[in-house]
Image (cartoon, rainbow, N blue to C red; front, top):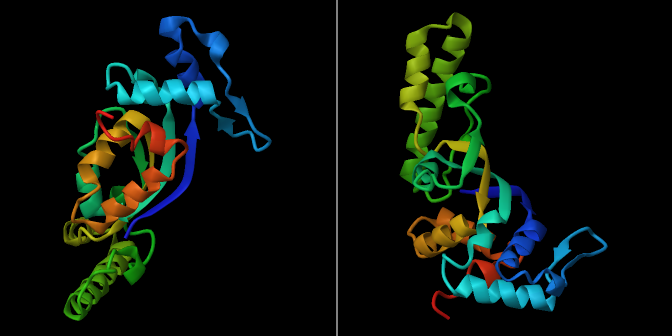
Length: 208
């Protein structure tokens, strides 16, 4: 299970202006803000952006300046793979260390969409035990109970993080993960594909 919410793409105007710096071609800029205050690339700017994107990483530096912020809720086993991407990413997460005991454990706190009947039965037993430990910890603040919660917590536990990335990082993620066996990565790549100008600036086939 993965949810991507509150997506915001910004700095496209500044990135596009920077893309024209090498040739001092600012007078050819034809992008504008529409009635919804969305930045729309004009034909000249879109043509330049597309050519630079396909020319390779040395020429497409401007897409590193196109920023994306998004709230992602996903299981810990997915975050373990996401954390491979440390360059040009920032994330603030909800804290299991400080807040694991703050609410009751429920089935929907865990990714269980692909569990078998037996797997679901086992997960429900774990949740019941975690909740018993949590209630005991809330009452006593016993450190052993806290460690039990932390160390017994399944990797299917869902965590929300507010993440900031740029389009260059998303190029790397898209091509590395689009055929991954985890369904969460397919949903993530679908989300990438729906970002503004993703077709031209992110998904553009290499070498074309």
